[in-house]
Amino acid sequence: MAGNASETKPSEDKHPCSSQKYGSVSHETAEGDIPSADAGIKSSKRAYVAVAVLCYVNLLNYMDRYTIAGVLPSIQNYFRITDSTSGLLQTVFICSFMLLAPAFGYLGDRYNRKVIMVAGMIAWIVTTLGSSFITEEYFWVLVLMRALVGTGEASYCTIAPTIIGDLFIGSQRSIMISFFYIFIPVGSGLGYILGSKIASVTGDWHWALRLNPILGVPGLLLLVFLMPNPPRGASEMQGSVCIEHTSYLEDVKYLLRNLIFGVITVVTGIMGVFVGTAISRKLRDRLPSADPIICAVGMLSSSPCLFLAIVLAGTSIPVTYTFIGIGEVLLSLNWAIIADILLYVVIPTRRATAEALQIMVCHLLGDAGSPYLLGIISDVVSKLQATSLEWRFHSLEYSILICPFIGVLGGLFFLFTALYIKEDRRAAEVLAIGTAGRAGRRSESLGQFDAGGLDSVQLSLVEMSQAE
Image (cartoon, rainbow, N blue to C red; front, side, top):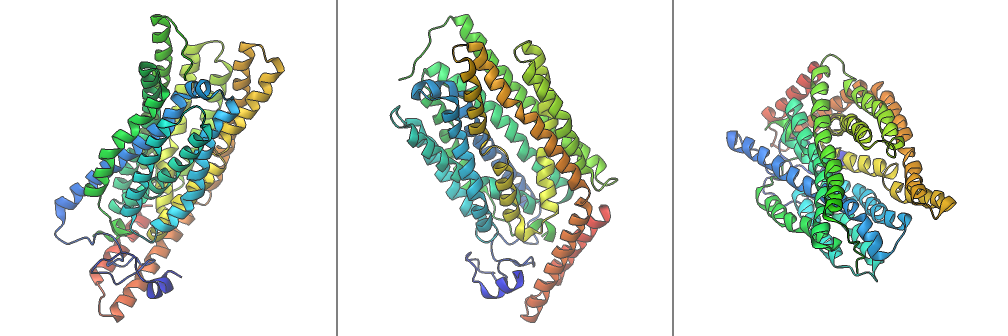
């Protein structure tokens, strides 16, 4: 099918050397910067700069996503909404992100990925900034703007990992992917901390939403001027707010609670990503199914920690933070590993689509409806004793208890994946070699065959298979 597409579908990228279209992994490609033989150290430095830019934008994406969480009580007071209604802000964001990810995956496997990311970044900046000017009569506009923010993020998050996959290979790719995914917990924690801090200092939650678009402008410029557009499979080829007046001491205690939670999220997330990547690199050569097993152990071990953190929250805050920290380290083990698994079980010309489907499924079964669902459960339980503030706390506690049990289910799925990961990886390598061979024969018949390029594809893939 890929071969037919390459022969009949015109390329959308106007590169002067374009002779192969979508679906080909030959040395010449229809889009992207063609690697030159004398690129040397310069191209290597450019690849590292590209990863740094992608990490920065990823940081901003997750800062924005969790800034809302940091100021959610202020938003609830401003619009006078319930837990379930406020949960819609995250639900519509995740739904738009989830539903549009496949579309951007389709585009990312066929068209200029840099252009798609730049367009998505512009949409993200405009909609995020626009959402900071919503007045209390127009909560539905804020909901709509959060949905549009999800559109911008979907274009970036779907494509960015595939570009890293085309800039690096093997253990170096794993390291770069781990750096990229480290900024998920870092951005999450910073968004929570800075959002609540800015809202507290200014007395207006709107200002918390304006920081990320401002920081996004240099990120957009970095994408435009420093981001390469590598050929797909290039690494394999090598080549009126109601403000409560409180004392200064109470304000400090409140901000420290936000700060502690945010710091725990940042530190444990970084630890989890590094530890997961290190264990994966250590065991992968000796145990082909190591990656999904590590993910399974992390998920299954985190569930009791999170359960204890929830049930002990009303008893001991230090103990709760301890279990949250341990649980988040274990949960973070799988972030970089999952991305690495996706890259080595999918051929280069299908990675953006696979990334999109993975995003869609995980959000469809996860956080797309969970904020709204947990809010509904909390509202229902709280009505049993509507006048009790303590019972309102317990209603949220009981609704969140669903999460550890879902974690156990996720761990079991990872164990099931471990049974097939070796065969899936080998099948992807064989398919990639076959695709490269067919593309090479077509090019040879046209007098454009580059034997060295095809040999390097086969050699790198065979080396990966032997290393396994």
